[in-house]
Image (cartoon, rainbow, N blue to C red; front, side):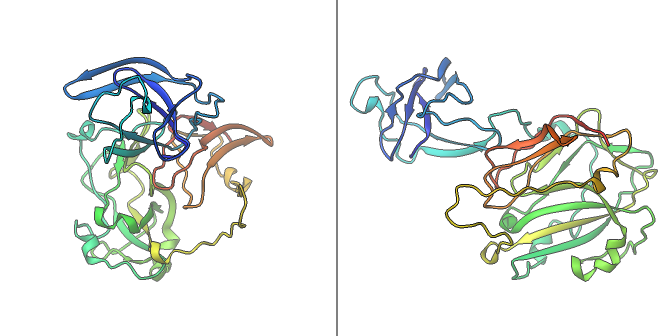
Length: 339
């Protein structure tokens, strides 16, 4: 392992640093504080803490966004004496895990919703969709399907969570999906709802596609939950009767990039803005953003969204100093945006 910040021990913690592949060295300065440790039923747990940034060259700053952790363990307790600082080689007893260490919400527990009503929107209303649809051999393709809102609810209900259903054998080809509301005036043939490459049915569906009801992208949690005071309306007295699910498939072997990054540069910044023509459409009472997640492609290393008022940045909606395409952390906190 090269250049990680290490904490380890038995039921206490020692601090280390690895500058190359081999036995780690003991850190010159102890910035980690061991709080407690225990061994029980074959498990060892060590509880410790440290500052997010210790300003120690042997420590790795803990950044907002996605943090990569590595772990390894031996079969015998290390001694506290040389050689090798009492550490034996872990062989194949090792692993890696990606998570956020700073203020991001965990996905909800599925059992919480086990007794509640639910309905599915599937691209062919059957579990065998991915067995019957062949992804074209192009670098990217968008597939669209119209869905009718369920008619089983005679009164207004609220959706409080949504879960993305993916076939595990084809996740490498799925890039993102969006679910659009259709204008209340939309009328479709319920016995033959359109389902095809988006551009093939664009003229049929595009005039009716309005707001985005929900979405998902690679790296995001498959299940997300609304805050207690919010929900998405459904039921017979809700005006939206049809939805369009747009699925973006990507063929990694044929993937190309539309953005050219100059060679041998330490950083390359791309700024984009939500123009006034969009924010002027907000209701005069404003809106509340309760969740935010970023989505970029493989070359991105950091991404953020700022709220700007009177030409001054006042707050982050999301700040991922460490961004990982395959593991994105939702930022769940309420931010008011007024026109």
